[in-house]
Image (cartoon, rainbow, N blue to C red):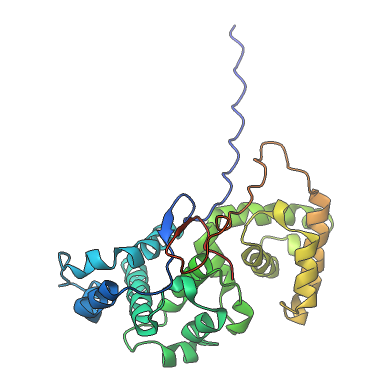
Length: 289
């Protein structure tokens, strides 16, 4: 009788990396004259890519440098691309291109305050600062571009912003669920309500930390990060007990790489000597300011 073959070991979930990784972009801050003309010639209707937009208009080639990173971000976001979501993603691209032309500077040179102004400290402020055609559904996708292209993490300045939704778009719903499940298992064993599947506090707090850390992996959460959250009051007081429980669980899981997991990958910075606006290019994550 032939012995049954052992079940193959489950493949480890791939580590997250930015959708910008492996791409090289010209990060010159100044918008060039031909790019300004291209945006003006295309106009709002073409830039929004509405039903009758002209795909062959020469302006598209002129703004290729500005358009490409925006398209890469949209392509890397998690979730089903419904018609409603696709419309919002296209409108984000149009909004950012128009703002680049207004400011005369590309997204690589925007400050945190400028991103906050565009995103709005709440939905009402976003509506006041955005064009009339940019609906409420645009704001979450705009935040994803701010995070991935602008290194923006000042979400505490945006009011009751849905950070969990944003984290799922950026890091992937399944990956987040798997990472949080590791913490839940520990807390459930200790008898915490946070260990239950119907709890909503743990995902909210964990996703805030993942966004700040620019990584959705539990084994990359550090004591320094937890200390920073407390020191800078980045969570409301009602969530501090959850933060404490999360830190205990992370400590219990241990800092060593677990079997079957790849070692943590250092997130890339700008090449040595690269300066924003130097006319050079950089790979992966944008230069930090």
